[in-house]
Image (cartoon, rainbow, N blue to C red; front, top):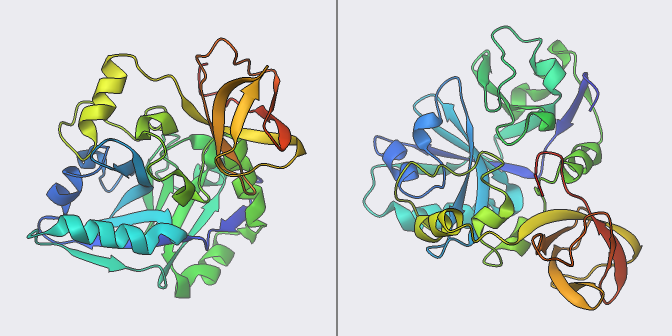
Length: 296
């Protein structure tokens, strides 16, 4: 990621949650602690099923009196409906601002040239009135500016940022082991904690109750985590969704995302798993890429 490159993430969407109950509303349903979200800090979080299975993940950013929710745009309508179901009598307003705001990602190095910036995951500053934050999942994913579409290109020019191919950004994200595309393929297929949300700063085990908290805590406390979502690289052939993965005819995982940036759920504790090995499925051969930040 070059220091003067910017990636316009047009496939990300923005919801805005506002109102006197907004903070408590989010605190009761998300996997992270909303109290971490301030003018100077944003956080990564998820919405799980009551059983702790993955539904959505997103970044939460404080903005004026409410909260931006930065989510994959393909899931934004579905997330909006799910939040509306949980709303009940809460005094909040949920708005889909995806046609008004856009997310621009750029390097950590560029972020650190801004006045008041700090090299801390989630650290948030303002460019005029618009939030700029260092990605709360991993600093190597760089920073993101959330800005009104009408102001975007003039602001990028003033910031001396040059538009670059969005594929570079998602390739880097895949190499880092952070899934951001085709997340609908993960829904209800794995536990949130199996998505490495703890290592990506997306779970707070001290905050108390939220949707899916009981099973998430049980897996953690009883050391039952035996599978993880990991990026894979095709060596030969092709991948199919839900295709089983084998090593010496022993099943050690399953392909969940089979498109441009593929991921699989891998039994990383299995004695037949070796991260240096080439694995087979019915239609292909591939390697499992274990990111440096994950100790396996």
